[in-house]
Picture 1: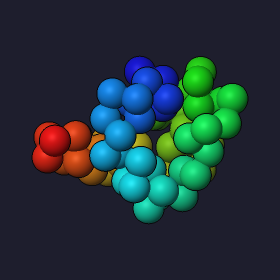
Picture 2: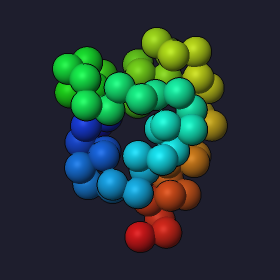
Picture 3: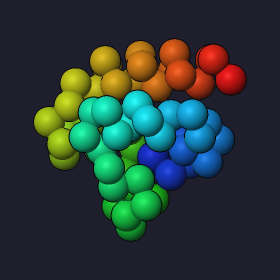
Picture 4: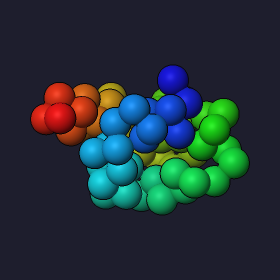
Length: 60
């Protein structure tokens, strides 16, 4: 799922992306990059990021 789609469906995940240094939520790459690709580009552990994103999304 592209990063922008995650943020659109689950706006509560924005803070999780920011905490992990992925501040490019509005950039063009976020429209095409999935979570794993974005994490790799920023040197972030994708599994940890996904776990925290899921946790934030489930709080909704």
